[in-house]
Structures are given as structure tokens and as C-alpha cells.
Length: 94
Image 1 (cartoon, rainbow, N blue to C red):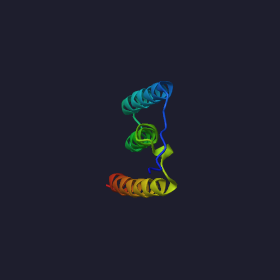
Image 2 (spheres, rainbow, N blue to C red):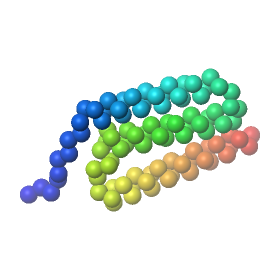
Image 3 (cartoon, helix red, strand yellow):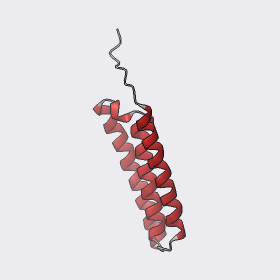
Image 4 (cartoon, rainbow, N blue to C red):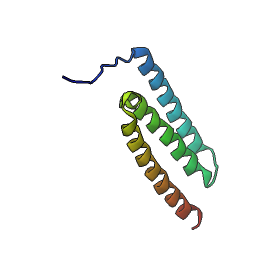
């Protein structure tokens, strides 16, 4: 009756995702110690976006979803990027 398929992700994949997220977290903390002036916020938000993409892909199983669902997520991410760009433009031109 159901057309759903079961996917099993090995623990090794989750371990690599954990290592990647911890590395990106360490990188975010390191970037805040370095004085990049106006680019500090941009770099920190870029790293946070990458971490969100990793969480969406592996923990929310986005890579196993249909392409229509992926299009919806890409649209939401595009709106997110626009909001961040508007925020950064306000921040840069003050």
C-alpha cells in the first residue's frame, strides 16, 4: 500500500557528519577571534549555512527525498540568502 522506501544510514556516516559539524563549529569560533572587520559576520554566516546544509542533508534525510521537496527547500534557502544579503547591506552601509 505504501510506496515509501526504507533507507538505513550507517553509524559511520553519522560519525563523519559529527566530525564535520564539530570542525565547522571550531572554525566559526576561530573566525570570531580573527579581525576581518565587516567580513567576520559574512564568514560566520557562511559557515552556519554550510552546517545547516549538512544537517538538512543527513539528519533530516533530504538526500533521500523527492526532487519536488528539494526544490521547496532550495526556494526557502534562496529567501534565507536574500534576507542575509539585505541584513549585510544594511550593516555595511551604516
